[in-house]
Image (cartoon, rainbow, N blue to C red):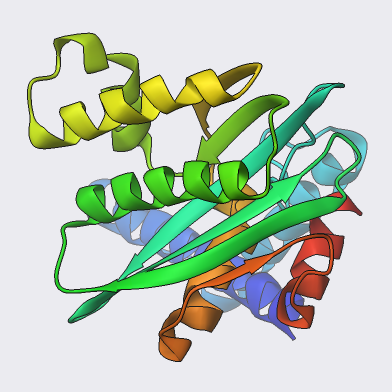
Length: 227
């Protein structure tokens, strides 16, 4: 149905374009074509475009593939986290996976009160470190978020004297628990499981820690990430 709608819109635009050309010809040259000629010209243009698209690679892809979560390098684990800000409550979600995409653990929780998005993402960062430490993961770790502002503050934390900057410095100090650790940015479409944990568990209003036996509610999203 959607493909048909796109074709109909393309045909309409080509017809309108030819109508506009015909109007310009009448205004500037005193010549005007009949409606049948305008339609035939638009129809021929459509055929030429389709032939061109069949014989040449399009400049833009027809369907841009949505990016998915990327597996960490060999010997690393990746910890994705996210936060959801509500009227009077903030929730966070964390998911830990190895280089094969297997879930090793994670958790979620909430805090009452109001926060800015930046404060909530910083809280989620802090809580993801706590989750990893509580589950005793000491490997090489990559923490991953889709909040670019948090990553920018992390990279410039040495010169950041704000409250968020001080909290990020404490997170950096907590990295000493791991063999190595870093915070990196990813696109929202690559952080869907952590986001889903936030949204699904927001209404429950409780903290929860899990190991390899992760909640069934996120199973489909986990499988999509590694398929």
